[in-house]
Length: 292
Image (cartoon, rainbow, N blue to C red):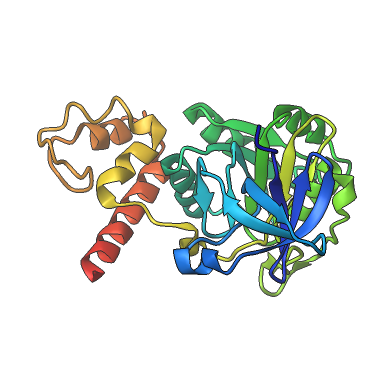
């Protein structure tokens, strides 16, 4: 039986690998570079111990999913972190990330932080009404974090969110051993400073593996991935059931007449913010496709 060796951290070309016998540091073979493969945190790998006892990664096992940025593999869920204020949630960014994770088959869970400063119920109701699990967390006293910890039990998850939303503070509650440094929000820029530079998983007592990730800005979010325009509609789960009645089979649901999806939006059955995000992402996808 093959040992379960999981990369839990990467730093300076050196990999921290959790093995049945404990953590070891390993390097990867140059052959991966020639094959266009780069081991990332979350990968399960095979190790070879050389005569000097140095561990070498000889193979990366099949992945069930992978993100290019942040570099992560084999995720069960994403904890998409957004602050109730400072900075206020950017719904278009949240919707784009949610669509990307949907396209990769990764469960998205919303965690709204800083509830000690502002109410986040409207955001929780928006995404909870679509069918996403949502949590509300108080960054000052940690209220709500126990529910998050219980939910991720036995799963592999990553905290992803905009810069300054309190991911590192949340991580301190979830995995105290991570000892992340927190930063104050830059009032001038309206965003926080990066407090996480590397991606590393921490194992919780309940068997979960949770990783913090570097924050991103509005511009950088596009580097998380793109979705073909023809597949985008399937990444908005609440749109299902509202597209069968369209007059045209190839309806883009943007400007066509007799579009059942647009009719559902006008009737309030679909949130306008979600539909507007779809339209913007569709146009971005078309522009990218026409570039090639």
